Image 1 (cartoon, one colour):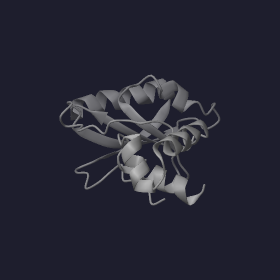
Image 2: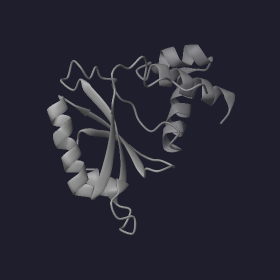
Image 3: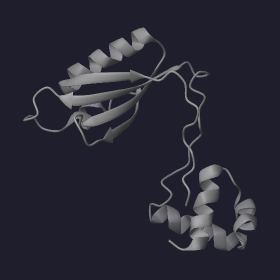
Amino acid sequence: MEETDRAIVAALAVDGRLSYTDLAERVGLSVSAVHQRVRRLEQRGVIKGYAAQLDHDAIGLPLTAFVAIRPIDPSQPDDAPERLAKLPQIESCYSVAGDDFYLLLVRVESPLALERLLQEIRTAANVITRTTVVLSTPYENRSPKI
């Protein structure tokens, strides 16, 4: 990826709502050139989409936890992500190295809701869970250095 595209991606990572005019000013190109480059970056999959960053407390999901999972029977098919995809409380699913197979980022409304979700996860995917509750979040969704 060339330097101008890196500058475009870096600017959009900080503020995905930048207008093409503002973006063009930041990277020193015409509006049409920026529009064309952004479209190409989207087509290539460099830019996967745009999303609002939410205040989870404000929307009633103040409890964040990481749930590590591993199968009860490792000889069974590795299909936990598919089995858990229907649970909306799971924000992200990461395949990881180490003792666990996957790490889930979950957001729920209360400790009781977390307990219910853990039972759903165990039942749906036939897994053992290990949970870490987040106490505070000094930062997240930081823009990468590009």
